[in-house]
Length: 191
Image (cartoon, rainbow, N blue to C red; front, side):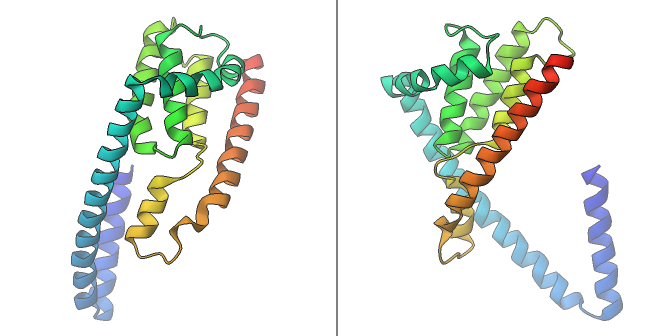
């Protein structure tokens, strides 16, 4: 759908610019936005490589085991279907820890692995299991202590105080997680 909507917006914008005589401004903005996109991509690539490497190192050490053990009581409540010695349990825990630490880019591959593992254990291949639904909700809410990706974006765009969004991020992500989990747990009783 977006493959249709965005080209339509671009065509309409360009036609409007021709009509009002602002083609020079739209051409300049196209080239400036391309340059900004490349700079932002390079910034993200560096950030993603750094944090993915740190997560790989953390996986090899006892740090990740200690952090996942701290999550164990919450994990038992959220994912009662998954046993603590299961591979999916470990992958979910690592994903949640990565998200909490604000390493969203490093959490993505971990989340994909966890979903793949849960799907392989899912009896109904065309339907999400309860654990898969809760996991999607947690990833969408993405509770973070330090939202490094957003801070990196704000910093690269010249924000004078890129860390000022930390408290609003805490409030928004915690509220989203609580509302999503509560809704899912209630609906799981009926479906």
